[in-house]
Amino acid sequence: MKKLILTGILAVAGLTATANAQIQKGNWMVGGNLAGANFGLNKGGGYDFNIQPKGAYFIEDNIAVGGYVDLGFKGAKDAPSTFTYNVGALGRYYLNPGEKGVNNLLHHGRWFLEGNLGVGGTSISKGGSSSNGLNFGFGPGYSYFITPNIGLEGLVKYDANAGFGNGGYTNKITFGLGFQIYLPTSKAKQIINDVK
Image 1 (tube, rainbow, N blue to C red):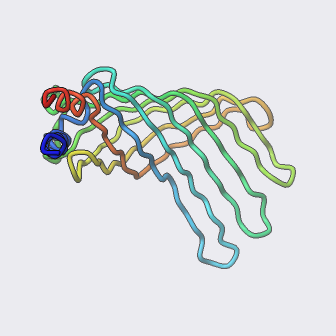
Image 2 (image 1 turned 180 degrees about the vertical axis):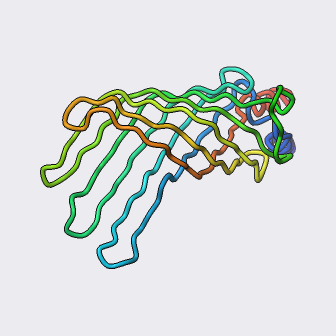
Image 3 (image 1 turned 90 degrees about the horizontal axis):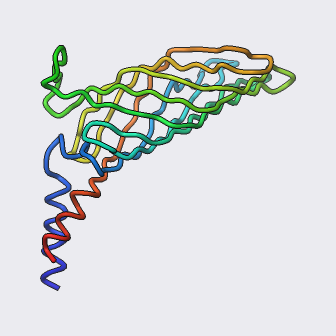
């Protein structure tokens, strides 16, 4: 029993180490963003929002690869509704505070660059246009770690679909706010193995 309690205490201590520990090789990142939420309050006002869950694995320190899903809904009373979807692979690179030209704005945060590539499409009800095709995007972001394992982030991204169908090529700039949970699997495994 004492060994189990000690293992638990050491694991918690290891999980809350430093702001750099969560972006080390072998760790996981899961979370998502809410982008462009708009809920109209006036007469005839509608809704417009996107949810973007994502997950990634750190293949090297500061470099994560994984997947994303982007689902969007837009509509209003007596108007066509629009459904958009994107799914594919993403990559993220966290900038080191000491890299040339990079200032660590806040002590507990890190700038990052994110890019994605996948498939996506748009479907508009009531006889509207539709398109399916290649989805890609890229842009900078900032993650502020409110705890050593939870980061609040903002991400500005160029997002495009090179589609087939009525829609053709569409693009936009998005701003997303969200959070990520960093799971330091390699660190936790090391601590548990050291206790054995």
